[in-house]
Structure formats: C-alpha cells, structure tokens
Length: 218
Image 1 (tube, rainbow, N blue to C red):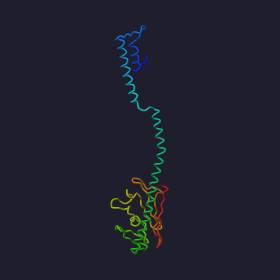
Image 2: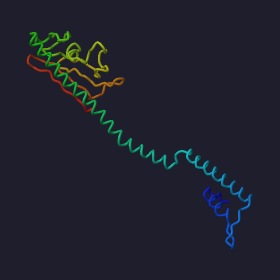
Image 3: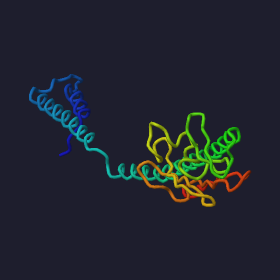
Image 4: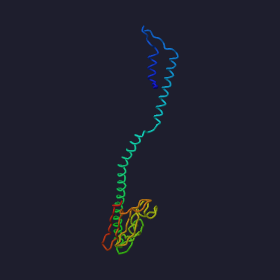
C-alpha cells in the first residue's frame, strides 16, 4: 500500500469532510473516519520529516565523491607544477643576488686596499665594521677569511658559520687558480648540485677576480 503524503491527506480530508448529496445538502463525516484520517496525516507528516533528515545525514553520494576527486586532481595537476616553478625561480633569484653581492664585496675590498696601500700578493684589509679580510693582489682571497668574511650577511654574531638562516650557502674555500664555491643549501637539507656561485681569486696585479653562477640545478 502506498503511503500518502501529508498534502494528499489534507486534500482528502477537505474533500470528504463535507460531501454533497443529490439534493445539494451536506453531511458531516463520522467521528471514527475523521480520527483515522487524522492518524494517517500525523504518521505521514513525521515519517516524511524523518526520511528527509536521514537523507540529509547520509553524506556524499559516490558520484559526488568522484566529482570532488576529479576536481582536486585537476587543481593538483595545474597548481603543483606552477608552485614548483615558483620555488625554482626563488632559488635562482637568491643565487643571482649573491653573485652580485660577491662582486660588490670584492670591489669594495679592492678600493679599501688601494686606499690602505696593500695590493700585494698576500695582504689584509680592515673593513669599516672592524672585520679583517685577507687579500690577494688587493682583492679578497678564496678563503673563509677572504671572500667569505667580506660578505656582511655570511658571518654575524647572531648566526653560526654558513649555511644559516641568514645565508643559505655552503662555502668551500679555494686557492687560485682553483675557485671557491658558494653552493645553495636549503635549511635542513643538503647542498644542491649546479646551484652555486664560483669565485676565482685574483692571480696578479690589476687582474680582477672571476665570479660566475650556475643555476641549472636550482
């Protein structure tokens, strides 16, 4: 037997409560009939509400879950490569920035060496902040006391020797003609290959050091 809806029961109640006979008069439905119709209405009303609440608590259907998974997959396929590209661009930018800082530091040390009159094969230069930088022909040599010490962000009283949060590069000293290297090293990770800067110290009077950067592995 089909369960009638609340609206159907109310409609039946209205149609049957006052029934017209052939003479046009109206007669009132009996009390038991009215009670049965009312019970059916109450049962149908609460049963319909309970069914609706159960459907609301049922959660997602399988089709809805599949659609959500597909959307997440599309977003991951589009956003993840872009995010990886942004990370690479950021590392390349950091390496390029350090390359410029190394060249500027070497030029500053050389200018101070000229003023202080020490442009010999081995010497030292006093920096404005009191740091002493070892030099080769007036330019920073390839040691940690030379080119590394000339970089203001490399060694500070707040951080230990690099790499550190202020200077994420692993320094490897070199003696001319061998180059010193600054390899980019993420904090908590290891130095990246082909994501570094090389510094070749001066090999003679008037010969500028060579600074080169590699970013193919960043």
